[in-house]
Length: 323
Ligand code: F6P
Image (cartoon, rainbow, N blue to C red; front, top):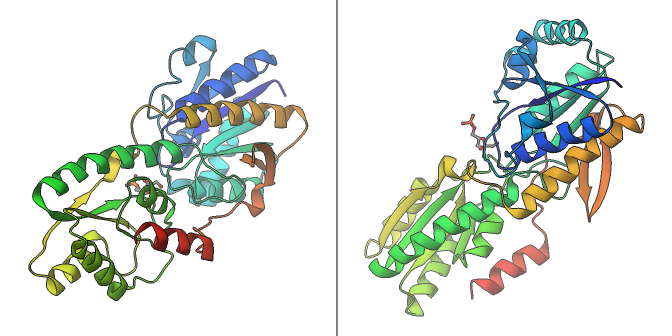
């Protein structure tokens, strides 16, 4: 392996730059040249390449976003788009590709590697944390910390005005952010996409809270709830309890930005180096992840989307904490 291409694809996540830095530095350490691809798969199809050296990645470990820019690429979903991408890689003399992406990007990787023979290593990043093959994806820890800090502030207002706040967090159709944030802010209730929303249960929890003379209640709602988002659920509560002061806040994109947390910087650095080690070990078409502290390789074809498992321990934890 003499020359690799590196791209960041899909929604940005804190820790992407830390991971770019690790891939580039590990490559240079092992005498491998790195070509950066701008704008994810879109830039790959267009041949939007640039050389990367150690200085390119100086002073970026702490920065949010991605210096390589990112995109969601409808063109890469087509065989014509992937053929153009392959031609661009051949023209540039690329021996292997390192992709930092989420489940949509990995679907693209699977489609590409099932046709073309260029070793491909994936690194998991998504604030949603909805990927198999790793305990945590890059960006998830920072996103939950950001949600926690935001809701701590919302709690001040909720307390001062005796309000119920419904705070909607990201995560698409997976409830990892909602679940962890619900715990870390001491929410009175959570609504996650993986469970059917039991509105009656929510009413009971809220009534109990007011009954105990709480002066604020927080409900964390995952954005992908089938029963509807924070507005819909809060309307049900307003109808049932017109006497309550109910407010909705959608946290949105603030969860995607900002300086990565310590855990995300460390994870991004470990996985970036692991990707290059995997290539040097002769691995191809795998994703590197971390499970229980160990680096784990998962074949791309079995990397898939995952959802929060609702087991008894989780249900009990939520019940105990909302008592
Ligand atoms: O996958 C990350 C994520 O932020 C999801 O939580 C959210 O549903 C989605 O991306 C938003 O996508 P877009 O950036 O295309 O608006």
